[in-house]
Length: 418
Image (cartoon, rainbow, N blue to C red; front, side, top):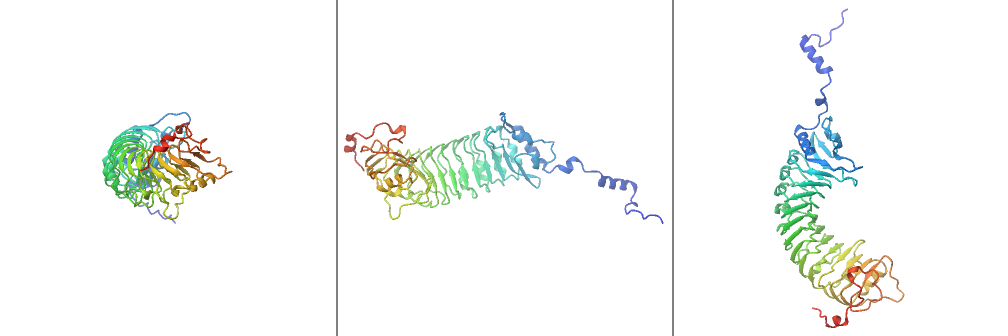
C-alpha cells in the first residue's frame, strides 16, 4: 500500500518551497532580536553622540554597554528601561562614587523618546542649556539633572508637563527667573532648584500641592509669596536676597518639618506661630528679624532627636522663654536677649538633651548651675560676651565668639530693650 501523502504535498512546487523556506529558515538577526522602536534607537544614537564618559582611571564607563550592534538595546543598554519597545526611563551616568560622570550636552533628540516617564542625569560636567523640547514629553513624571554645569534659563516649556511629579535642577549654573507655570503644575510634589544663579521674584502663585520646595543659594529677590501650599513638609529659601516680613505666611502650614529662611534680608517681628511641635528644623539666622521668643502657653513643644533651631544674628530682644528647651541644637547667639536663662535650658544641657547651646553675644545676666553639676562631654555650650562672667560655657565657643568673657559694664548699663 502506498504511503499516505503529506497534507502539503499537493501544493504547487513554488508554493511548497516558499512554505518550507518560511518554516525552516530562522528569521533574520534584525527580525528576531530588534525590540526597540526605530525612533527611539535613533534618539539613543544622538544621545551617545552628544555625551561622553569623563575618563578616570578605575571608573566604570557608562556607555560601555551601549553597543548599537547588540540585538536588544532595551535589555543591554545601561540606564535604559523599555515597555513594548519604547524607552520609558533613561538614567544617564553610573552614579557611582568613583565615577566623574558624563561630559557634553543634552541633545534636543531626547524629545523623540515620547514615552519617557523618567529622565535622570547623574552628577558630571554636562554643559549647555536644558533642551526646551523636553516640554513635548507629556508622560514625564521625573526630571533630575542635578550637579552638572547646565546653563541658560529654565525652559518655559517645562510648565506644560502636567504629569510632572519631581523636578530637580539643583547645583547647576542656571540663570533667569523661575517660570511662573512651574509652581502651578497640578501633579508637582518636589521642586528643587537650589544652588544656581536664578534671579527675580518668586512666582506669585504657588498652587502646586508641593511636599518639598528647595530654592536655596540663588539670587532671588523680593518678598515671600503671599501663600504657600498647605501640603509642604520641607521648605528652603535660604541664602538669597529676599526681603520684607514673614508675617502670617506659615500659619496654615501645619505639616512643615523643615523651614529654612536663613541668610536673607527678612525683617519685622518673629512670628510666634513658628514655634510649634511639627518643626524639627527652624533656620532663620542672619536676617533682620526683631521681636521676642514667645512664652509657653500650655505644654512646651516636644522636639525630637536631631532638632535644630537657629535664630542667631538677628535683633531678637527680651527675656528668653522656655519654649525652645529640649531642642538638640539651639543657636540664639548675636541677638539682644536679656535676663536669666530659664532653668529648663540649664537642665536640658546638663542631662545631655540639648547638645549645642550658643548664647554668646547677647545681654544675658545669669546662667545658674547647681553646685557639683558636670557638663557632659557631648555638649557644646557658649556663654561668652554677655552681661555676666560665665563659670562654664567657654571651652566650646567658636572662634567667631572672640576671646572676651563679658561685655563692658557700660554696654550692659545703657542697653535698652524695646
